[in-house]
Length: 381
Image 1 (cartoon, rainbow, N blue to C red):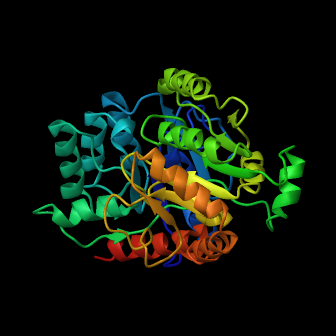
Image 2: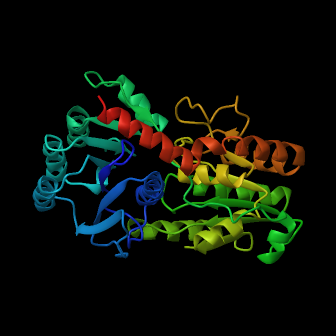
């Protein structure tokens, strides 16, 4: 085995393809692809909701358990004792694991080095925060995927500050070179001259959909010639939310202006995004690079309107000139911003050019290389 080749055990309950789609699973799927290209041997422990794929020479995906709780933790420790992995990489967000499984991962660290990739650090309860601190204290190292986690880690006492921030990439990539926007509109039976606003992502409270709809109601007074494409699926727990959205569409008289596509294949999402004159994601609590919907905008080079970042960001700031920022939950300002941007093609072109300049930082190849370097650095400590 060369210095660059490792035997890695990755824990990811929602590794794709999976009955339960989620951003952490998509991220892990892309990261595994990049680590395989580098030459590592990888075993992924997924849930039994994983759709089993044929084994390859260097990738095994094991549908390990339905829920990652106490019994799964015991079986995990036995697995680690029987196998000579070089490291364990846990893809962490609070909802994915039970307390006793986290304890098992900490104990496994006495056998094999544990490196935790934090997508979300902890929930709102003290118990959840205590579990996160346990992982931080007992793991060999950790990776932050966004600036919110990095900020918390830097402010947490008694926790070593020697960690890396490696961002996530897009879960939807463009279909080659972007087609002419007019042609793209024709292909989806959209009027060529009308303003097309796109919003992509899972439907759940907090994404600013209600703000966007109310802004479109105000926009309708200025011009009735627009379409709002709401591209996205529902999580199991959010089925009542789509009813709220549909009722609001009717209440605001936007039935002929709003297109609710439902779940789409990645190629279809990309095709719809190619029609967008403006991409709008007005998050209720501010923009963040942990939002794959924003990374998708970067990857597609879209003129993007979003809310001011929740915390200082190296990417989501006025200096980069890559985004048009609006205050959160303010439909009047959002409507005026959309109208002004629609009437300023030069401004839209500038936003597209500058957002494309951010692509290299969020490219999966770059993410894979950075992660590989960080894994070796942590193991060498």
